[in-house]
Amino acid sequence: MKSKTTLFQISITAVALLLLGGLGAYWPVLVGANAPENPLSPDATIGDAITYQGYLTDENDVPLNGTFTMRFQIYNAQAGGTLLWDSGNSNIPVNDGLFETRLGITTDIFNGEELWLAQTINGELLTPRQEMLPAAMAHTLRPGAIVKGTANAIPNNYLFDVQMNNNVFAFNRGAITGQTTTGNAIYGLAPNGRALYGQTENGYAVYGFDGGSNANQGYAGYFYSTNGIGVYAYSNGNRTHPNILAPGVYGQSNQGVGVYGRGDTSNSYSFYNEGGYFEGGKGLFARGTDTSGEQGYGARIYSNDYRGMYVQGGAGWFDGYFGGDTGISSFGYTDRSFASQALVVNLGKTAIEPGDLVAMVGITPSPENGQADVGRG
Image (tube, rainbow, N blue to C red; front, side, top):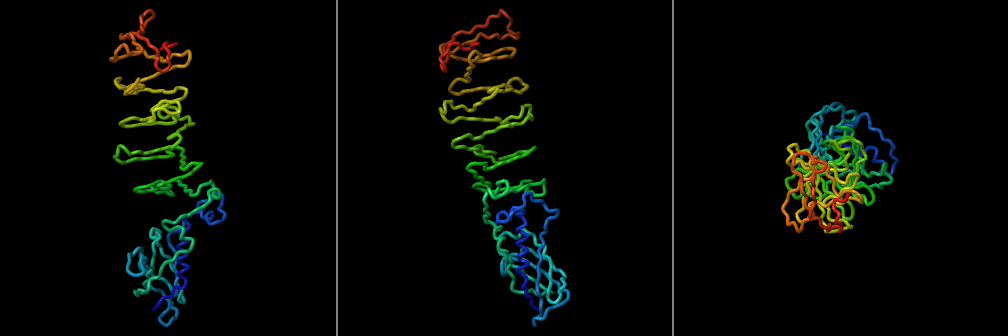
């Protein structure tokens, strides 16, 4: 008994067409055809099975008829190798030598390596194995292949667009995933556009997670600019989170600082090397929430080598305004000759009444602007 598989190449072409289905409506654009403007998802997806056809004769080339027990196996080598898939035994009808069956091959074995099909009929193993050859266009799907296209010829200017609908198309609920031990898992380059764009309605447009233990390099997100802004955030919403109306930047830390900023240069663009620069209706608004009253500072400002705080108001306005029940509490040790000012503070528990004496002594010109009228109002 021997088998002729003159139609085998056609059946392998079906495998390639099955793989090409993964590109959906965007594939015609890459090969030069016109894709529909609004591609619709099919009601039913194509299964993994492929059609295999053959022509069976006896040793005298006479076509056979009847039902035969057939088994199909796929290996990664022409001889020996590793068994990748096994159909098991199936009873398949043969009419005038021709037979057809469906092979429920799982697509995970199509990873670019060579594949060889072994066939057993009524317990007789036919030799040699037959190589499974892809269609020409299917070569663009092998690992390492590069699919190129012109951005302005593709809908929405996306070279590669993946859409996810709940869990229908999902890799751990992510449309695209990348993993690497070194280098860039996902890399985007846009000289005049957005290298990476994320959009969401009630989730995270961009989410980063660091699970390492290296305190010096464990960044969930790292942004670097050679001649611009490292991170720029803008909010145009009206939602509060938490109790703050749509913040442009919101930072939270379980053990440390919610937002930390540092300036590395000594002087640039007429500004000092601020760790943070704030500008707005209220340049800086801070509120302490520690109920113990010991560490609940609205703002704690510290300098290792210079003044802890420098305040300058606009023309005709106070340099500093303190509206609490007890005003200012000052404590420290200094040589009086170097002090810009000293305060006589009411340390009682009652508010200052009209006629109470409050004195300021030792006033000297401010070294920042040469003015002596500190506290002008």
